[in-house]
Structure formats: C-alpha cells, structure tokens
Length: 330
Ligand code: PMP
Image (cartoon, rainbow, N blue to C red):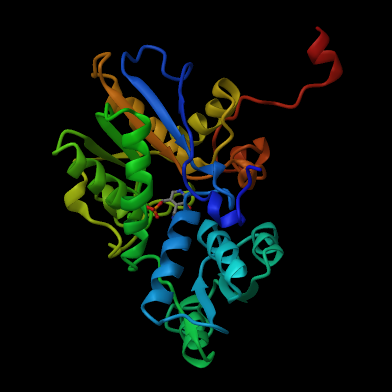
C-alpha cells in the first residue's frame, strides 16, 4: 500500500512546471515551483516543520507546550498543521484588519485566535506585538517561533527547497527567482544553489515597490506576504545578486494571467515573482534555465486580486468583466 503516515510527511517535493504562454518572446526555459502543493497550501509548511523540530531538539518546546506567534497567514496554517499532529496548542495573534476567512482557516486547524486592534501604537499593551509577547511570557511552556529572526526558517529551504530544485533540473538551473518577505526562502534556497553550483546560479529577489529590499522606506503596497519596512534576521543579503522592484499593478495583472493562460491559480506574490523573472529573462539565451518559486495558491485572494470590484477600488483595470447571457451569445 502506498500512503503517507501523516499529512505532515507530504510537506515538500513540490513540482516544477514550465510556463508556456506568459513567456512569449523569452528564449530561456522558465519553470515555476508550485508551493501550493504543500498540504497547508504554501511554502510556509516547510519552515513550520523545521522550526518545531528544532525547538523540540533544543528543549524550547515539549509535551503540553503552546506555540504563540503573531501571524495571520500561511505561517499560521503551517504551524497549526504541524502543532496539531504533535499535540501542541497554538495561539495566534492577528490584527483586526485580517479578514474573517483567514481567522476561520486557523481555527479550522484547531488554533486559538486572539484579535488585536490595528489602530493602536506598537508600544500599546493592546498591540499585536505586545499581546503576543505577553502571552508568550504568561502561558507556561510557551514558545514563540519568531519567523523573522528564526534561522531554522532559511535552514528548512537550504535542506529541502534548494536540493529539490537542483535534483529536478538535473543540475541545469542557471537562475533562481523568489519574492522576499522574511527572506527565508531566498536566503536558504539561494545559499544551497550557490554552494552546490560553485557560484554558477544567479539569485534574483522580487520585491514590491516601496519595500526596503529594493531601497524603499516601507511605503504601503497591496501585494501580501512580501516586502518589509525593516531588515529581518532571516534575510541574508549576501546570497542575493539582484533585487527587482515590481508594482502592485504589474504583480496583479500577471497573477490573473497565470490563472487564465497557464491554469496556475496563485497569490499576488507569485505574480510579482514571475514579473521579476520575465524582466531578468528577456536578455537570456535558450540555454538558461530559470526557476521561479510560487509561494501560495490563489483561493485566498478571490475577494481581492480576482475580484473586479476590489481591483477597481484601488485603480487597477481588470479585464474579466461579468458577462450577461446576451453578451456571450452575441
Ligand atoms: N509570498 C507569500 C504569500 C508569503 O506568505 C511569504 C512569506 N511571508 C512570501 C511570499 C515570502 O517568503 P519568505 O518569508 O520566505 O521571504
């Protein structure tokens, strides 16, 4: 019989898929690594597994322990999934601007969700940061993974994402492209690929316009999961050869095209990474093999990027108007 012992055993070994349509005019082979094939739906399942295993090994997390993290997104899902399988309690602190759907996903996996007001200063006792610090201090056996600083995040990509890409491209990868959030994906995967290729693989980061990685000040942008207003410890700039800044408009347009033209329904940070990849690929010849990491699926963004009303409310011009029966038969 062929089966996995637990769902967590299915984390990693995500497939590479060639892009065939959005790449018109590009000579290089552009492959995407589709991380929504992970059981929790994103690349964050990888870091959750490694961070929890390391915390156990270091004695920071043990029987009856509680994981406390300020997170509303993919990291929460990954942590909740792994924690549940190992019998830990999970408490996530989320700001009230986070939608009910995202909170519901975390609760569905058995996590407890504490909502904090967005409209208070970071040093207020009610803030997202203060509340998670207080819960970590006061819950016996609490452990805070702190994905922005925890080196086991990049290490998980060094040990899994990098080797998978090297193996699946038959050592032929020449360029690796990933968006930068905590920086864990690009730092760990990039470091492995540079080491194994003796420096032959170029590592390119994609960043929302306005974020610090591409020289901004943290100015707001809408693409989720990437860009920062500070430099996290999980990011190692020495691994990255180039950072390409991408606007929200370009990121969202490409996100929609990936679904419509390639059948790949992914989030906005994936569209952003593909825009950066295609810009970097335009001068490359046919021997170049580029791998672009797509962190999560698009289902969590149906009310935003894939919703024409939401897109228009931010001044974007989507091209998938609802049609009447008369429109489609005329
Ligand atoms: N895209 C999405 C949707 C994410 O959730 C994340 C993680 N914050 C990233 C991209 C960036 O990954 P990393 O934190 O490893 O830089």
